[in-house]
Image 1 (cartoon, rainbow, N blue to C red):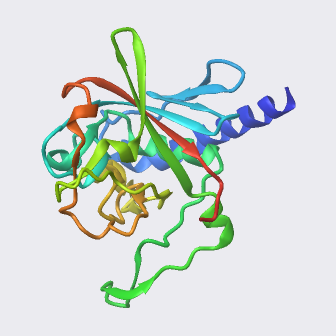
Image 2: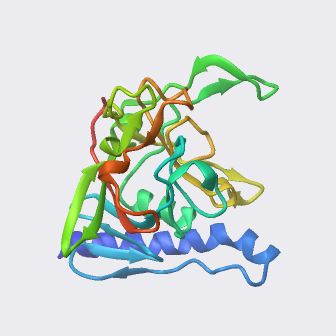
Image 3: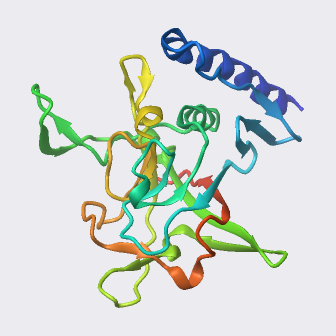
Length: 245
């Protein structure tokens, strides 16, 4: 009970903080959405907006739909504001709400995949360094599930991509790393750009693939034989791994 109450206290605090972050948008647009509250659905299951999350399992459940099954893919997940023409999944969640949920589950942003910028904001050849805590609390896996003929189909995300060389190779498993996006002129950049999870490293996205192929935008297409029809409702499960690897 104490653990549950402590988490609820954090949820209330997060709701207050998210309201403060929304104020610039509300000031600019009187029709802008107000931040949703965190609702408790069961002992460990909560919901913020359209995002559900489990505080005990350290899992986040994101509703989306399959957007493409043929094109070369650079993003796993975007909103309609994002790079829709090259994303596998499309969602209508608010990226900022997802950021709050990640913080509630004790994620820490790691900038280790991004180059350091010089004084003129030009990328250098040096990557940001991450602390051991940032590494440990930034990594997660992604599982993809959908309903088919009354059954639930599940795949690790990486198995749903095929290499463009025709070898039949799937994407090598590697941690997905929460980078946090950033605030720009009082707005959350991922809300503006709509890019949430990227394969090709993107500083504005909320999370990125850490595999060695992350700088090549020509490598991955959907594994169509495994996927349902375009437009099928999908659930992405992000699970915190708490590893430094």
